[in-house]
Length: 206
Ligand code: GLN
Image (cartoon, rainbow, N blue to C red; front, side, top):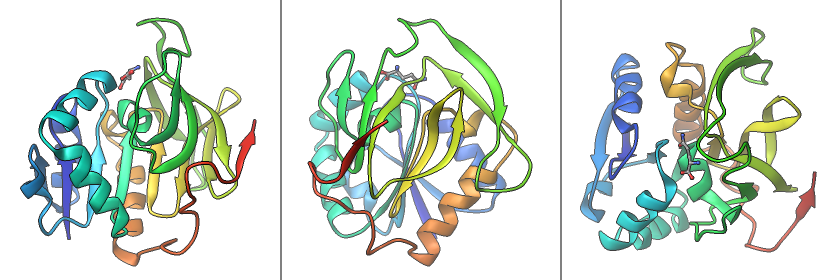
C-alpha cells in the first residue's frame, strides 16, 4: 500500500513519521505525478489558505479531484479538514468538497485556542488524546457522514465513505490509532458505495 501525503505546506513530516512507524510506504505529494500508484492521500494540518493556493498553482487541485472521482481515500487533519469540506465559513474559502461538511475556520477565535483533551471514540474503548491547534469546527454534516468522535459538544472525527476528517491532529500524539483506522479504510475499501453525496444533498444542521 502506498499513501500520499500532501506536502505543499504544513505538518506533513509528522504524518510521514507516523506512516514510517506503521511500516507503510509514503510519498510526499508536491505535483500531480506524485499521485501515481497512491491509494490514499493525507491532507495535513497547517494553513489551509496557503495550501489551497499551492494546490491550484501546482495543478494538484484538479489531480485530487480526479483521484476522488475514481474512489481514492482521503484523511484530512485540521487544515486538511477545511480543504475537504463542502463549505467553509468564517472566513469563507474555496474547498475541495469531498466531504459533506460545513466547517468554520476561525471558530475558536483568531490564532488562539490551542489545547489538548481526550474524548471517547468509536475506534477503541480507551479515549483518544486530541491536540487542537486553531482548530476548525464542524457546524453541519450530511446524513451520509458518520461521527466517530465528539469533544466539547462538536464532532471532531467523522467519516464519509472513504473520506476521514479530524479537526484535531492525531499525527502529533504518539498514538497511531486514527492512522491505522485510515489505513483499514484504504485497504478494505470500506464505504466505497455509501456516503459519497453530491454537493447539496442531505445536509443536516447540528
Ligand atoms: N485554522 C487553520 C486554517 O485555516 C488550520 C489550523 C491547523 O491546521 N492547525 O488553515
